[in-house]
Length: 240
Image 1 (cartoon, rainbow, N blue to C red):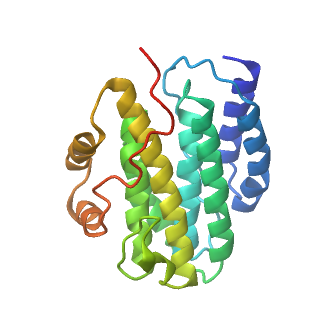
Image 2 (spheres, rainbow, N blue to C red; image 1 turned 60 degrees about the vertical axis):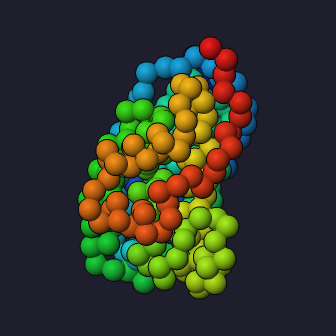
């Protein structure tokens, strides 16, 4: 692994583990510059658990707490999986920057226990997908995006949804972040499927059947998230 790669992964982990969301947001442009300068050798490496991000201090609304979870997911995706194309890391840092803007627009209106309740419910579900980049890309963005819908009207979260634009400023901002998560996850899910010679649609259906239950599964299907949002791979699969 090159020095640039080591520096990127170490710094991404440090940002992920920083408890103050505002400090994390200020560090993201530097991470983006490092991702732009990185040159991976395309050698897939073992998954590395970067550690659990700390819950931020209280005083957040439920919507802001969800945006922080989306930021956590984006940074974890960048720090956890090694040996992917540089574009993968650029995409997830860009996603972190986008959901960071959503967080800044949603701060305020504190709800007692919001951060702790949401984190205890959703982060364990996200971490169940951390062993395999294909599983992570298919499921974790959907799990968070489906829960983001709880703070607006019941509409499709996909980026092209007209209802999302008309749902109001706060819920619309949250859906914008959800759409970014979904699009980024699906691009790299299709890429991972291409590497393994797997058809994405049936694979996604199998993973949803295996990993989701009850309310989570019902919400994903109700919102139209059981199908692919982004059908094109991020880039052509690497040759064997």
